[in-house]
Structure formats: C-alpha cells, structure tokens
Length: 125
Image: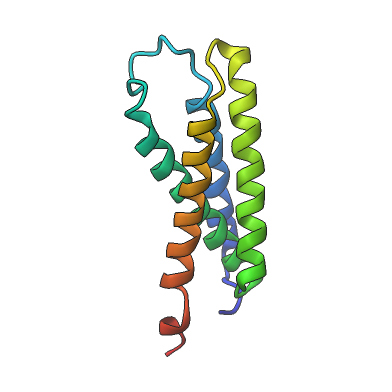
C-alpha cells in the first residue's frame, strides 16, 4: 500500500484518541462514569484494541505497508505505554492493576491482529 496523501488526518485522530485514553485512565476513582471494578476489563480490551488498530492504520498510511516486524514493534510500544499508564495511576488516587495491564496488552494484540487480517493479502486484489 503506498503512502496516502493526507496522513495528518490519521495522525491527528491517533493523537486525540491516545490523549483521551490517557485522560480517561487517570480520572479519580470517584468519577461517576467509570465502570465498576471487574467489569472494566472489557473496556480495557476494547480501548486498547482501538489504540492498536489506530496505531497500525496511522503508521501504514504515513509510511507505507507494514509487515509483521512493524506490528510487533507497535505492540511493544503499546505494551510499554500500558505498563506506564498503570504505574502512574496511583498518583491520581487510583491503583495499578496487573489484570488491567494484561487486558490492555491483549486488546492491543487483538487490534493489531484485526488490522493485519483486514489489511492483509485479501486487500491486494
């Protein structure tokens, strides 16, 4: 896939989404819109699946077709971000959760896998 004419649209969408995700994971526990403990794992999976897909989509539209090594690198960056995200939550009155982190990295893997499937060989027609 060649580079797109306007990758800045995807870059802006990725930056906005990632910022919203950062803010959403750092609001105090008392915030009324937060899901109850335990039920939030699916929120983590979906939120990070969207992040994984959006990172890959933006990267591909900015630089050209991604390969498996690119997707592994994207997953590693997102996994490191997820760990940092969990470790910084105690500073705002929340707590770090290993299960939330696992849900995050699983979601990122899901989003990247869906991207690879959707943008894979069947799109080369």
